[in-house]
Image 1: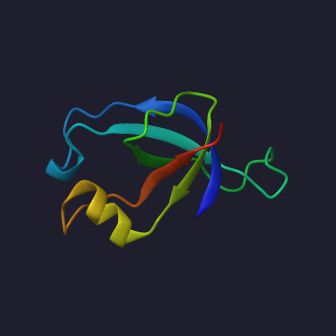
Image 2 (image 1 turned 180 degrees about the horizontal axis):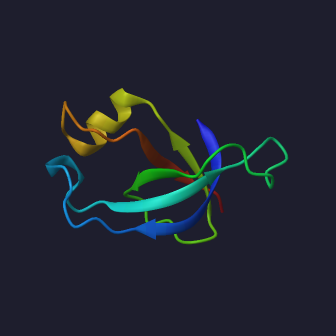
Image 3 (image 1 turned 180 degrees about the vertical axis):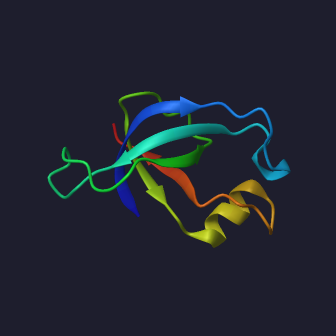
Length: 85
């Protein structure tokens, strides 16, 4: 799990069937200080409704993502599992 800041959304004209109805969020992983970037921005599936500027928790846990999307062969790597208040 990583803490990240939502920096935008992505639009896709063609998606894998498992991603239908999901928002694609561009997130910037953050370092331990919660403000410095830690690596390149990532694309995450968001079913929680996070918006630009929100601090989110993302995971690359494949089992969780397969259950979330109800698909055993989804190409999704990152998914949003929480939004910080």
